[in-house]
Length: 320
Length: 320
Image (cartoon, rainbow over the protein chains, first blue to last red):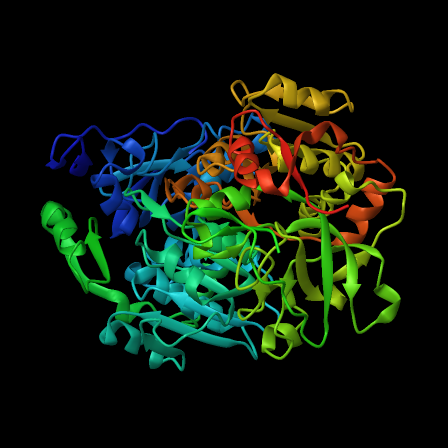
């Protein structure tokens, strides 16, 4: 099959073997897939992953033990827990140390004509959600994760740092859930921030002039300096949520976090159901986030394009 | 008066002016003071502080608006909030940005014959607590702080990293509060760990062989690498409490914290009342922690001694 494979360098291959589904797995024909910052980090060496990249996708089930799924349009959760260890037993399958992660760790991903995933990872889609929107389910779920991790009572003030793909999703997810909160999105790009501004969200260039005034700061910068900026605007005893993973290491001054008794919370994959619902209802609008659509055979060019400044979501159109 | 002053270099001075108490302040004759890791970090440049060092002390009130305090033996909280800003209004005086901090920021400290502090910062002592024990009230309070910050239900497993002064206090404070929890103290020094072992606390050399198995890890290493070690043994979705402030900056790989959705909580000064009670009851025994007592005039030698490997608490005996 055709696939975009990272093997120390990124290669477009026409002869990659079609994966064989295990017992509980479905074989899925990929229709479209999104390029995520994590893909770009993997190419820089993050996670040491080799194989087919890509973990944001929509596809059609071709083979499955559950015959009712065959022919259905699905998105899929990306963690594949072992199912037998203590973490899995404790309901923390997403943190199973033996898990595979689609296109990120020990599992070929979605930038290919076919992928396999356990049937239990799949979520059915209705026709109310387009293929391009469906590609955003996984990152939108990641945006919803923080709503499960932190207390957002109405008197709180919240700042989202970063106006990239994830920042724009997180700010929208927060604006859905916050009533009576002060929400500020701070970024670097007037055009990207305008997507939020047009949805009634208070958006600003940079953090200059902001004090240590936010109960909650969400770092979606995708940059190693995001935490330092977050610590500049979070209140003492406030919370910083880190959504950023980067290949680069960075020298942090965590003294301020200790002195200010700040809580720093890592946040990653999230719940698919509210994400699908919000996209279907267009309560979160991702359509302005699509920068360009490439066919899979132009995948290397697509990845290069996704790395450019100012680009939001790049989508690979793979099947019909 | 005689004082140990940091002015870019550490000096013992005989001619330092006796401080004048403001309206709400008491003048306190210092009896004894403890050398803390923070003092050693200040000498390396931490906080950019210049003035009289020292913030762990016991003394006698010599002058005070509240005449009932005069002649009483006291310890004192080290933060001096402005009392008028929003943080102070919200009950977060310890985080007031304009605050002074005894011997650490904008306020001369305790390595001198006299210091001043607001009368409201003072706590009276009974005769059941010795001067040497009283010097430990401030760091013991810091150990109790984390009990106010994290949930310690009985099923939790807890690891304390670091067998220095603070680690030994934190492990003892935790062992008082935890019933049915698994508590492990990991350090580097058999002699220091034996203080904990002799009190029935599970102590071990290093973290080798430990998995990601603790719900809560408390970093008391005083070392920039403490957070990295903590992230190696904390469970996914677990909590790391940072008690460490260091002058040195360190390159952290926070990706693991994000992927594992770990919560990192800074923790600093704490409540004096339970600390005084625990020391008075000898529920926390600090007597084995006193490595050596020096007179104030040998202060420079005392600081040098406190910096040596293997030394626990160094006390300056200042007044009678």
